[in-house]
Length: 414
Image 1 (cartoon, rainbow, N blue to C red):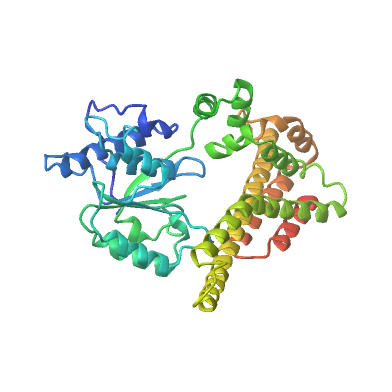
Image 2: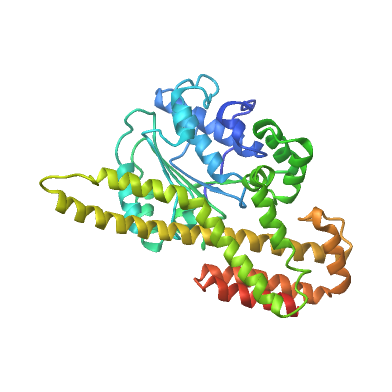
């Protein structure tokens, strides 16, 4: 059975400031995490703490964009806060700032750059987690996308979660607590923290106040982002992101001839490839330069030849890692495009049914109405299923161009 989260202490109202202000539209989660952070600081000081408020392992779940990793990082900062007082997570002290920046010595953040998290990575992480904190109150291990754990990595993590070291906290983030995302054996040893999709009003407010986005653009981005805060920020601030979305949403009503199938499929795949390349290009070169310098590139004298051989081997390993990261970036970019497509066909079904439900793409209401007048509900549903099947195929390592061409052909046929 999954452990249940106790209600926070009556009367405790977490502040909407400091690290907690970064968690958008999740008041219940903030309340629980705030109470847990307070209890954790009482434990460290040896004072009585509410029973069950704090535990050694947490599982943050919720739809994409709900802020799972943001909530986990804010909680980690509150645990390390140097000025807890009555409100841990001040956001001002050195501990809070370094945790948020990802540089705190006792907070290890794992962001999988490839398609999976390997058992070797997890074993090294578990060994590091067994050490006592050096500068902070706790040793915190935060694993984003823990649904990418391989079976071996999950088993290595399970042992650490079953027998947790003193003053070590594990924070896992995953889309859901389904066995396909998180093994039951791990899930049953974590406290569940389920986040919800933030409301458009909350997202628009964040864009206005933190990103200095105008009212009209903030509301538009909030209304079309599907509740994904990061996506809303990109759409509001990046013209190229808006152009990519427009190209994707022009596909459904633009498939007039069968030849359009191959043009649209090729465009989708190339767009995801270019987005992945642009996102990683500068970082890849910086990593290569840093590695060459560390390995003594350009040096002269005794031992230069052996150092060069070592540098070449390390460079090949780095390139392998970068290739894996590029593959993941491309898959993520393509999946985002497929989510937008699925939203369009969902809007067509909503329009045909006469439901008052809000559209995922209100700015494409005219295209949705046109499609709803031309397609049957059955053919629309088949198109939606084709998009979802393409997403599944990509997770099973089907070559992107093959999966996308099959999908677009189904979209054209209906």
